[in-house]
Length: 362
Ligand code: NAD
Image (cartoon, rainbow, N blue to C red; front, side):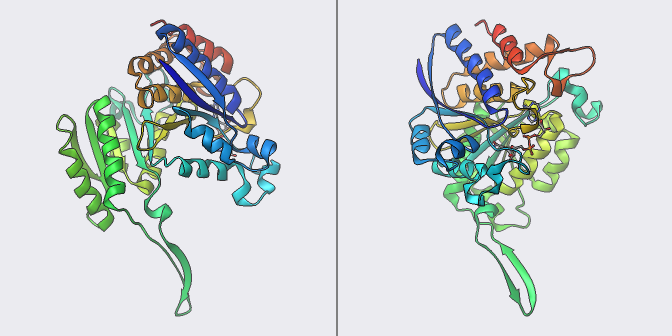
């Protein structure tokens, strides 16, 4: 099959880690008989330097005409980079927010997986980790508290602020459908997280999730209050498959879930719209402190490319091959500096990419 992939190399370590993800995609293409064509798209600091703005209309059009977009990361050193002397709406991150909006990316997926070999980086006790964990946080990304009406005013001489949390049933249904669809591709369990004992928006969330669940009899589901979920993530993370939740709860829980995996260089993510299209990027930033040194860990980006294969291109077998190659490279004791421990072999970014490619053989 032939696919067109938009590529945002971005800033800092972005170009280095994306180059390794492309190597891996090229290896997949060769082994499984596909053709991937790539189109470079400018975003963030690279776009400011070339075009004077963090995102152009042309870049949005390029992204829209792709089957999926793979991104490194954008942004620079927020204290020293001249990009941060610009007004907020002209800075690198403004481009990222704008492209997410332009592409209607309402579903954010962040897997949290514990690799046996990296268990020592996990802050949870062994007896609680058990056989490890493999979960995916699905967070609603374009509604809720962060997009609601807000304001600060003086009421009777007292400064008073408010933020409103609004969801309509359509917004809930489309993310719930995504959650159940994705659970079907995984272990078939959805934990829908809300605060239905207090919030009306959560009671509507629960009602719509129950309606959607009826269309997926093969997927089991449960409701969990957000405060309990925050506890369960550190008490028994192995119980979760897909955690489905609204924007603010997802923001907090996905950071908690990624912390328990122990390594920022390993965390992939995807943002999807209601077609097959998605933007795939590592959860970490552009790490300007290590840019250009060939020491960044490319695995989060490589795993994001695997998510792209699975969710946008429907190439499940190929995605699994990339994930298996990552597991194998760790089992074979190779580590980038961020996940290095004594007794393992330290390699650079480019070498790590090659080692993963060597482990994809169909
Ligand atoms: P960061 O994630 O870039 O770096 C935090 C620390 O983790 C640094 O010490 C860095 O060296 C290390 N690190 C990150 N990724 C790594 C990797 N793959 N391999 C090895 N080490 C890695 O966060 P920051 O320093 O707060 O932000 C730097 C820039 O990135 C800022 O401009 C910020 O706005 C931007 N940022 C972009 C995104 C994005 O593109 N989606 C996300 C977060 C931050």
